[in-house]
Amino acid sequence: MKILFIGNSHTFMNDMPSLVRDMVTEVTGERCETVMLAYGGRSLKWHMSEERFAVRYNILHGGFDYCVMQEVAHPMTDEQETYENVRKIVSLCRKAGTVPVVFETWCEKAMPEHQAEMNRRYHLITEETGALLAPIGEAWEKARELTDLDLYWRDGEHASPAGDYLTALVITKTVTGKMPKSDFRKAYDFSSPMGFFQLKEDVAEEIIELPQEAVDVFRSVI
Picture: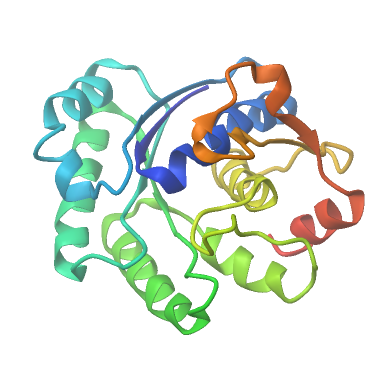
């Protein structure tokens, strides 16, 4: 399986696409490859204007099975702008035989009231276009009520390693229909104590294990 990720820091935080790769490989028993076009703070509009050559090339010539697209979340961008650019990416995917997947983001930690609007927007555009919906924000909303493990990084917006584990779990379930075994507790933490602008350079140093009780909660909300 080959998956393209298009997004921003909510995609690249803690090398989340690599965790999807690991989970999909565990679930399917086959090699999974992930490619990422993700830049801090960038919207789908930016990707389809400033980065359009890379997006076009990767989708049309990359041989991807799935394309996961993630929009600006904090704050949300203009609704019609999101719809317009999701439609453009979906159109490219259809031409290439790639399945489009919309990444439903989570609200800011301090603003849980924003989640309902995010859910509404992403359900609407996936119903219109026929793209798959990865209901990440909805899973976060449920998990926050059931675990003391913080899903957020210390800025209250980006994901912690636990948050990215849950994100990867939802995406894996969306594209394969399955989840890895319950003893799959691996996560990545790519930031040093100085923050995620001082990244670990050794992949082995990123790897951590989550508590089994947290993994059980995450599985229960998907």
